[in-house]
Image 1 (tube, rainbow, N blue to C red):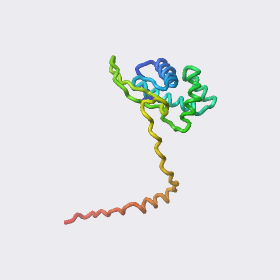
Image 2: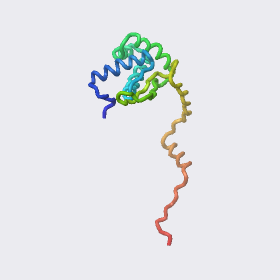
Image 3: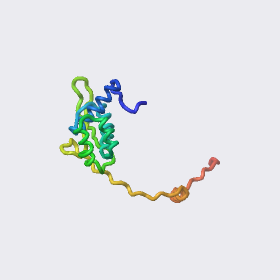
Image 4: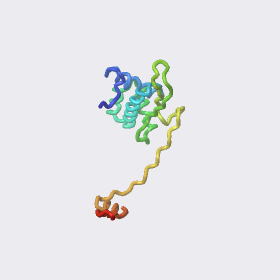
Length: 161
């Protein structure tokens, strides 16, 4: 099983279209409309680029520069987007299904960065993290489980006559 969608294109065309062009345009404009299948692939790649921007090292900058097109896009990744998502652990993009394309009935979708001005739908506030319980060694845990478990019922092998 492959780890990505092939989209009916040769590898060179697919990588040029998705990684270089569409991710660069998404970073530049912060919202693009494309088919749902392409948007799902662009979402993976764009989230990786934002992660590189948050990392901020020279190695990350070189990886991103080999991936996206344009110095303005690279600058935006490492300054604006890295600052905007510095407290977010992941999920930097949102996929919104819009319409069915007239020519070939392909489902279309907007892909956009979240937490920005003029976004189509407001992002949900982060869910509060449950409090961390102290870890127990296996013997204490099994003793506690037995303490609160209901008693087992005895099965009678003799049928009632």
